[in-house]
Structures are given as structure tokens and as C-alpha cells.
Length: 245
Image (cartoon, rainbow, N blue to C red; front, side):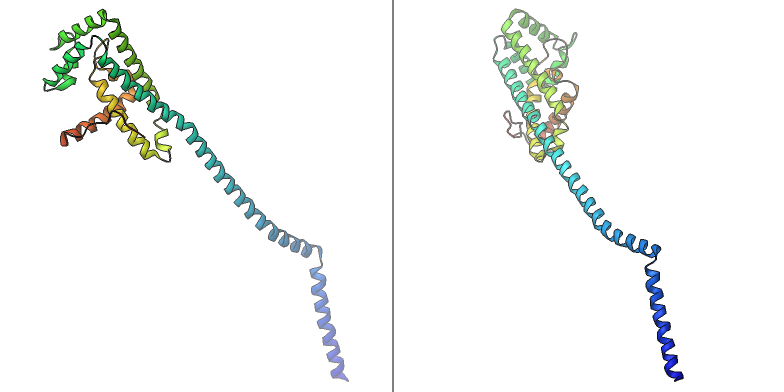
């Protein structure tokens, strides 16, 4: 009898403990904890999904920004190419203009001078060794309107190329085919620079390179220095007058 009663008491104790745990789990604080845990489990994937969505949006925005930048840069690159070719054409026309005899004399003087064209143009300053050539050039410009007009067109074309060349400096680094464009403009700069550096300015000292403006002239002069260095090693290496992209 006592054993049965003891077992009954033990069963009741275990039932009471289970009931206690059930009641404890049913308390408001436990329910809040359960709800918070469940909410956290629901919010975790939501936060991850939001983070993934934001990352995708950033990538799309960067892609669109880059693509739109390429579209904005393309016209600038083609405009600079066109103005560079126009400058070459204008200087070629100047070489064919009436009154060009004086430019041929200057060219001959450069060919027979150890310092080349730079020395001759430098010597055309007042008191210089080639001051007489400067005076002859001034007379030809005064007497021949066609020659003077051709000079002005060449100067204007060089100024336009200088302006367009300045505008594409950053575009050349951001293009997907930047290496091709850079190689193209190296050839174009060399051709423009070689032609402009061999023609004295219409007025004042120096060559027509100065019409490019400071920044573009620096770019072109650096290219010319590299070309000259290569030319001294390989006399057959000359800049292409009609570069292509």
C-alpha cells in the first residue's frame, strides 16, 4: 500500500513539475521572448534580402553611370579626332598657298642647320641669325592676302584642336577601348606637332605649336620628344600623317 501511494505521489510531483514548466512557458515574459525569437528569425532573411537588393541597385547604378559616361565621352573623342585632322589639312593647305616660297626658304635653312627648325625659328627673333627670314615672312604676309588667310585658317584649326584635345584627357583613361584611343591620339598628336613645329607663327616669336594652348602643347611636345628619340634610333620611324582609331 505504501509503495503504491509513494508511486502516486511521485507521479503527481512529476505532473506538477511538467505543469509548472508549461505554466512558466505560458507566462507573458516567456511569450514575448518566443515572439522576439520568431521575429528575429523572420527579420534576418529580410535584412539579408534588403542588403542584397541594395548591392544590386548600387551595381546597376554604377553600370549605368559608367555606360552613360562612355556615351558622353564618345562624341568628344570623335570631335577631337576630326579637329586634329582639320588642323593637318589646314597646315597642308598653307604649304600649298600662294606666297609659300618663304616657308620653303625657312625649311631649307632648317635642313642646313645643325639645330634644325627650332634653331631657325629661334634665330628669327630680332637680332638673331635668321632675322632676315622673319622680315621676308612679314613682307609675304602683307603682300599676299591668300597666304595670310591660309595662315589664319591654320592657326584657328590648331586652336580648335588644342581645345578639343584638352577636353578628352580624362575620357582617354575611362574608355573601355582606352588603349586603342590613346595609341590613335599619339599618332595624331605627333603628326600635328611635327607640322606645326615647322611653321613660324604669323606674328611674334615661336612656332605655330603655341596656337594649341598650354596644356595641349605640353602633351604634343612630350609625344614629339618620344618620336624624336625613336627616330634617332630608327630613321625609318616617322609619325603617320593620317592615323586611324
